[in-house]
Image 1 (cartoon, helix red, strand yellow):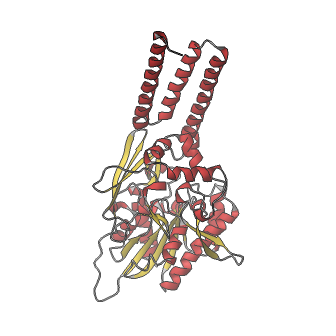
Image 2 (cartoon, one colour):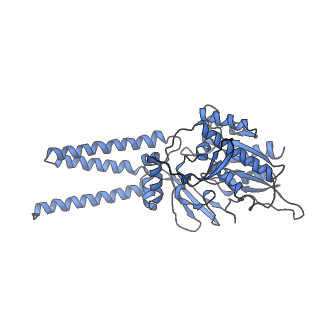
Length: 418
């Protein structure tokens, strides 16, 4: 059937409108902080316009139903952005090698696979991170790494006549020092405030949990790095480390898996991803990792998608037992390998023991007898004036002031007075 001039003009107009909408959507994805609300608005407007112009009732009804469905999805996007992620709003993060252009944006895919740890970053001289919120740059920081892939510590001049002593720090981004300069991290400042008497090693990294600490010890990743006698080891623990320790987080599916055996001992069981779990979330995370960078980058700008990707089940008592067992086994190995070492836990009690899961986690840690230090003691007004100690209301990582005061606490109450 041949088209007349009128039909051809309508077809060309439709193609032009579709191309214009695609261009507008691409611009929104690149530059707008909440692009999918803009895209949803365009689609609703297009569907309503099409419904008005339609002559057949069933076609008109189809366009109107499409407009309603898109509006519902837009409402869900607002809910996830403003309510579900209210404590940790979605941010845009870009990592890049020093001297290279910005690259990947998610911990899920930004770093190298590591057989023992799940993922790691071992490329000198380091990398940079640029973090934005609603299009505004919050910070851009360069992370300097040593020859072992660890964030650098303070200067240390060893006496060649004696074996140097050192401090070991384990943990996640709070230990690594996400968002602050090299000289503003907790390990670095603790070394300075201890009068540079100790060589400092920062084994923390973005998104890590206690299972990476244990894997670092079991697989010799600590032994092969340090050339000293460790006097103190510090593990910065967050309540969220319980979920990380049992593989509930999307970014660490290749991480080392530990379980409790029948005798209650911690045993290694490969990686979290070795045993493929059924269900929508597992499939979504697996598919997400296979997507090209731009597709992942664009999808993660949707708060609804991020919510589905990072959603997990509630913490159970068995999870806390595994978490505690991992921490205790790390202590046992440290004390076995380095006689006289003192292992301490610095716990970020965000809720000041009002959250039931946090309370149970603290009770479990107290039960294994490891010295436990609370942020509420080191930073007494943290609960009332949290804004003083974080990078930004949209980014709850500690700032340089928090690390400085916490380093004072460690140097004055632990290291200087054993």
